[in-house]
Image 1 (tube, helix red, strand yellow):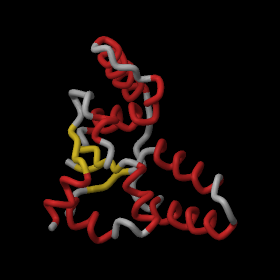
Image 2 (cartoon, helix red, strand yellow):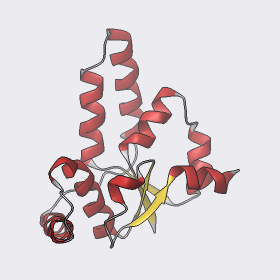
Image 3 (cartoon, helix red, strand yellow):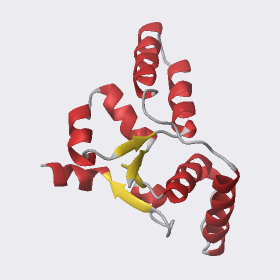
Length: 142
């Protein structure tokens, strides 16, 4: 058991709208993993910052996160991705605008992790995925 935390949660931590101890209180002693997809999204955000101070703040937050274990995207991840994408298309959902989300979901399914996110709509139609929606988690911590 463990958690894969969606980029949106880490952005809230970096912005100070979600305190790290609140995340720790909900996730407990379980291992929290990062995806290279999250690292890429956070690095993109840092590089696109409006000014140097914001860029440095974002890069510092990214550096702190890199102490967490990072999952690899491998052949099995790719096969799971293809299966999930095909299931979505088969049910009339499009996956093209959700590529990063599907990689995260594929990694969570592959490693039997619970994906933690704010964005229920981005993941709710992925049947094999164990999902924890942060507002629900926040109520559990309170």
